[in-house]
Amino acid sequence: MSTGLRVDGLRVTVRSGAAERTVVDDVSFAVEAGGALGIVGESGSGKSMTLRAVIGLLPERARVTAGTATAFGATRTLGPRGLRDAGPGHVGMVFQDPLSALDPLTRVGAQVREVCRVAGDGRRSARERATALLEQVGLPDPDDLARRYPHELSGGQRQRVVIALALAARPRILLCDEPTTALDVTVQATILRLLADLRRELGLTVVLVSHDLAVVTSLCASLTVLRHGRVTEAGTVTDLLTAPRHPYTRELSDAARALELEAP
Image 1 (cartoon, helix red, strand yellow):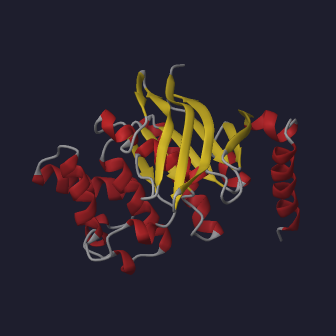
Image 2 (cartoon, rainbow, N blue to C red):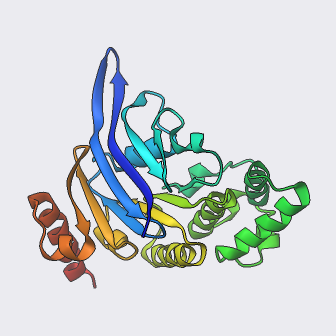
């Protein structure tokens, strides 16, 4: 199967005064077209910075100093705009906090319609497609919900709207930055099932970032483990959980098993 997304030699630095600190150091990974890759690691390991570098949404003081990305055969040097320079339809992103990802002063339907318009839909087509997207992500009565503001929705509903926003641009690659962290356990499971269903239905290539090994392994077949901005180990979920080579991977696996045993 062909590669959907490949990143090679990614390096990201963050400026602090006159100094620059490397927060992502020579990170490389690949995921086949239509596949799902998980990137795991503790807080501060560089997971989110990696995704933001790919899509071109780094914080103000951060910049890419090295690295290329290959999306469906086309290779580009990563710069401030990441893969957005490849044009519409390549990459979309689901953010960690759905409340901050949405405009609090704009009805959710209008937000989805705006992305549809940017993706090339006419006014009427954008309205129809926005309703269809809200329905596709499992929101009840999408016409009514489209008229609401983000604060009027539950956390799970807001995250579904964020997924609809990502899909509105018709991406082939979907980057998910801790998409279940702000949700309770029951809602987490429904969002993960939704992402799995959408990947199969739409043929999406998914990269899922999380500190939670159980979340990643529920959706992904392969893993890349980050620590202190560097890749410590990569391979299939089965190999990394049953025969990890790096001590840090063993620590993550042991911690996940301990939490499972403690669960009521």
